[in-house]
Picture 1: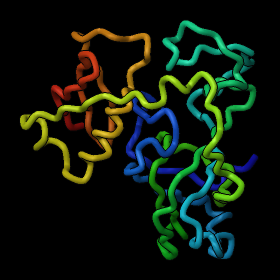
Picture 2: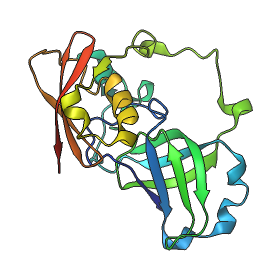
Picture 3: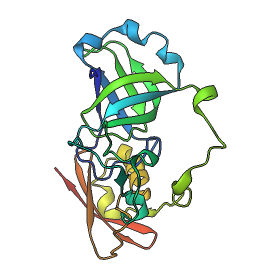
Length: 223
């Protein structure tokens, strides 16, 4: 497998990254191709598609060996399910699959053509193996059944950004940050209203607490 590109996002660590692509549609990312693949001809026609598939590597979770059973965090980390029934990063082959919105293509840059995408669930520097167009007639299944995820996929938190922290958050980043936090980045088995959690996003260390279905940002530290 050849790495054709790397994605650049505002996530420098795994904690806080949306659990699936498309959950936070306002998240920006840039796909920069490696020198052998900086060929405009390879992208001819891609501008006509609104969404694309990214096939990529779980580069931060590679390990020797594998287990047929995993503990999905969304089930509290207490229930074991088959690895092929989950999207766990701990797989025989550390391959991820994400559907993202293609915002635009920047055709001429010092690094060749750059893809600007929205909704990626990937860490900064993630290697990309392939890019394919998303086809609604083949890839969309509105009547699909979502297995064990059905009861939890709509759970969202109410996010409170007090005035005291707003000035520390750039205006353009407030919406994506609220959407990230609304999806509850905590492991499901952690529910301590006095515990202060933190995610690193866009050069900020966001400290927050959660009480019931309300998440409050208590401090924003700049790096």
